[in-house]
Image (cartoon, rainbow, N blue to C red; front, top):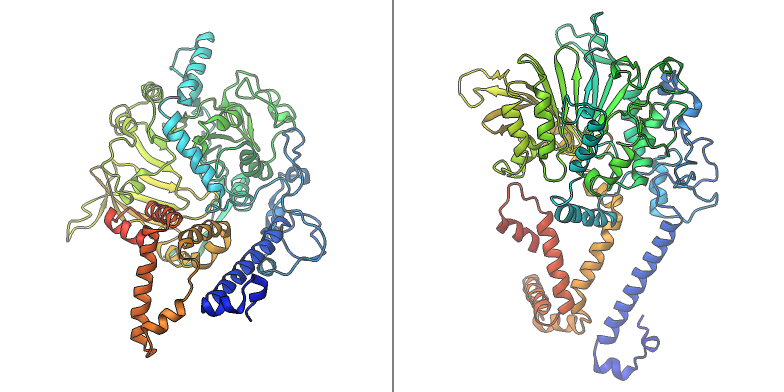
Length: 621
């Protein structure tokens, strides 16, 4: 079939140009089919047929919570009523309609709808799905990061403003124990006389999607967790009862991909509000000017608390949060409005006024939460605050350091172990004012779990490995509900300064992590289909100088008349080299797109163990 008349070609033109008319027709038909398929695909997209929660059926579930709250969790939720999972958004300006609401009509048949039949995923109203990280939304986040890192950071630091405002308030109230007494919270008077332990929970990187983050938050909200373990010696199962922590420490990255009010409300606050109900007096539009929010109206057991009552007299759970790198993309503006100016994260009380904190716990333990911002270090105001707080510590006291980024893992992986700019002030603080007191370091950022223990004689042959008791244990716990990071990419043995560490455990294990990585061959393309549009446009621009390819087949017959396989390879190689030369000789548009693709692949190529020559070679290939 050759539509010459449609395209305005006569038979004489066809004879003169040999196969040009046919090839041009093929290009036109190819373009029409591609654009037709894209048009069909976009219609499905705008109709919501590609959403994860879509199922092409007339019958819809009566409640979006039927598949989320299973029978076991529902029966154990004695502290919640039915209203606790249906919060109202009437006073925050956000829509109360479900994001993936669809018309109850027959859908057009598509690959998306067919795949979604196999897996039904729903989420409550007023929430957002997990982030498609390689879609076009990442580019706006990258622009915000570039603006924050190179324009605002170092010129305007929100941490300095916090110190100035709190210092002014402290001076008015005649408080002078610390330069920032609002950052020090005393829980040492909590009742542990009966022999019960003091517990606190830690989570990080919880601002991706609702379903996965809710599962973690719902477990944290339970009064007790029954964990079953097996004993290798007796071959029997044991039950460990883990009580809910008095404190919940969150290690940053509260909302992805960037800290907008919508992401904070629908990806972070809503998750914890559904997990543990806030007090009846809670309003989202409320701005706190007095912390902690005592007395608590609506809870009879807390109405007797006074404004100056200590936190140790409050029986409910409290939470303290440090910002992560994603919380800093707007200069900490949203974090300040929603964390430092609110009183409640669900049923957890938020008493902090700064992005860093110091918690004094019973039995001579301290928890120090640091805000490293985007320059991976504490500022001078934080250094002064924690140095003065360390004066209250006795030589036998123990400290737990909480930061967002686990540099003990990333620095060696990214070949930054000799970078003096990372945590320079923090290292000085630990070396001097916190000397011999740090027993544990907690961090997130990596969405997995690893624990590294300090060891002696790690490379000494014939000697048994012994643990170094004077060095802190290093734990990464970033499994707050975001996508999973691999564990098999990192070394089992690492060096932190002059100290040697060995990874004792990891979740997922290195074997499971390696097997899971093979799923990216299919799931990456399906979950990040919008990223393919960028590559399609880039490749089309790169090949634009090749069109039209008139006479390609005739050229092949002239150079390989014997139709041999070796002649085909030789002709293909010669033709590809000729077309590549056209990019640099006559293809202006193709040259621009080629440089763009090489630069993009060079920037995204793993640079941890490859020099720039190898990375450039992979990018060109």
